[in-house]
Amino acid sequence: MKRFVLLLLIIFLSNCGFTVVTKDDFGDFKVKEVLTTGDSRVAFNLRKKIINNSSEYSKNLIKVNLQVKKIKEIKEKNIQNEITKYTIKLSASAKIEETNKITSFDITKSVSADYNVEDQFVKTRNKERKIIKSLTNNLSDQLINAIKSQLNAN
Image (cartoon, rainbow, N blue to C red):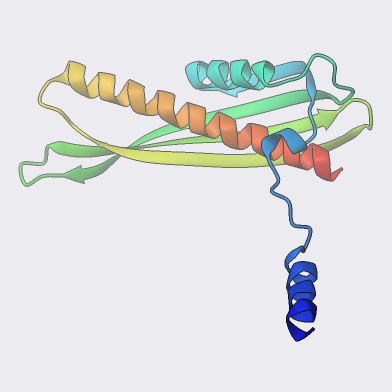
């Protein structure tokens, strides 16, 4: 009898009702308009990703005002005063306006990465482009998740 009661207690106490929240559980949105300022290449890619992640049939209509900054700084120099490492920082500030509810909220996200200077300029430039592309994808994912979570909270 004690084992049966113990077994029942374990069964009832182990079912806490916890469920994993996935991206699909967040609210969806439909982009009505996207205005961008700042670095044109990064802004274009962010704009494209936000529009691609919007749902055609959603009732949440939003307008996005996106300000993008790209900062490239020298991180290290060697003894001969030659640059050996750069840091690239991408930051995006978005003002989201819900047209149905006449509310708005702001989102600011930033990402950064370092890269070494190569022997040839072409290799360095290609490495920089790859890092910018990777940072842009990371930044767009962060923005989209923040937009969805803010819309879900409202």
